[in-house]
Image 1 (cartoon, rainbow, N blue to C red):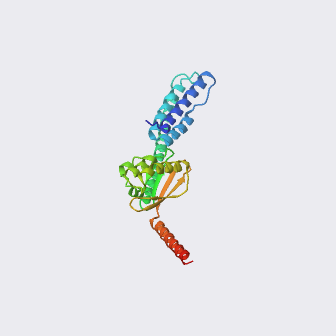
Image 2: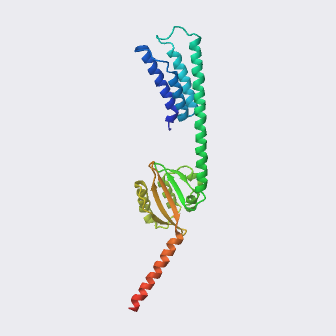
Image 3: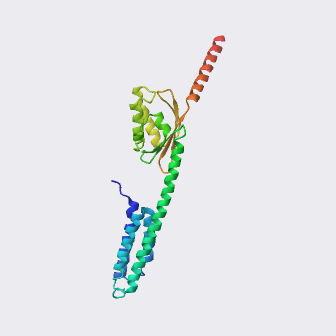
Length: 255
């Protein structure tokens, strides 16, 4: 189970700040009311962890501020001014959490919309594209790759690791390789991907297509794999090589 550290960071910082302020005020020296600092922390919590994180931080800030008013340095009793300060802090922190949370949601929605448009655009190209994270799991697989390697959508959308994509190609007979060579091919390709080797290689598929694979190391430690169809180019090169070979053979015979 993954822990969302961004969601618990804000409430944790709020609690730590409040406890430190109370401890300093009671055991060392009087300090100013930390309410302005709480507002900043609540806004940070909502921006980093969302509205729920901000509201929890706001509740902690108000609760701890009420304890702060009970310190020996505070004016005895809870007068109208103290209650007004608590009400003002509650309103301000809740407002800061709400505004920051809505701003975060707006930014995330804009990012999600951009990602969807980019994904739709990449699905229109005939180059197979796979984006791997730092754990070599596929964060994105475009339509061309799925078609070339007969990869079902449910498997592609489940963020399979790179090695699982290689085994899928082996199990479905996609590669035009003898069975005894597949293990070495998969091991070599995996090692090249992990090392970030950008040397392009041609992959022959069983249906006659030829894809030129290029691996690009990304700044965050992930990888982008592009599979460019080069069938016509390779066949043309092979054809020209055959013509040149025949011509050389005829010239030698003539000599």
